[in-house]
Image 1 (cartoon, rainbow, N blue to C red):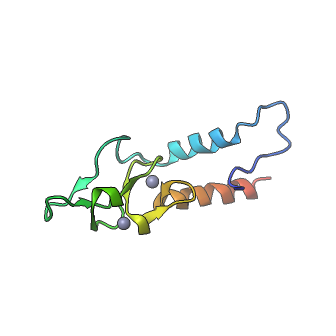
Image 2: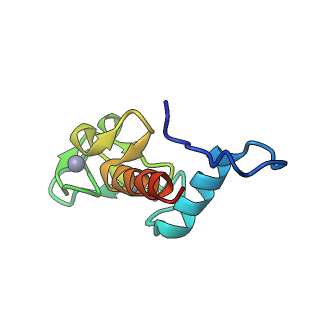
Image 3: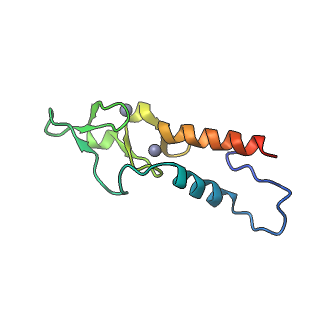
Length: 103
Ligand SMILES: [Zn+2]
Ligand SMILES: [Zn+2]
């Protein structure tokens, strides 16, 4: 995975680019829920929960909580590669592009 592109001119610093990007993302991404907070209940279904992105009802086991914003996402709103929701995946892509363009 080549998500964490480092600036090679930065000598002397330990290679902590991964942490840098994650903490930058955490500053940019507004946390919608705390980790461990359950998804929104679907008022129309007793055992249903709502995907925070598309607002469709799903069973609890079909939803995953995003590590960055804390939103619950269904499979089609989920980016398995980075274990985040599609919304945060967009932010990751943006940051990756930015760090590529600033040499
Ligand atoms: Zn969804
Ligand atoms: Zn997210």
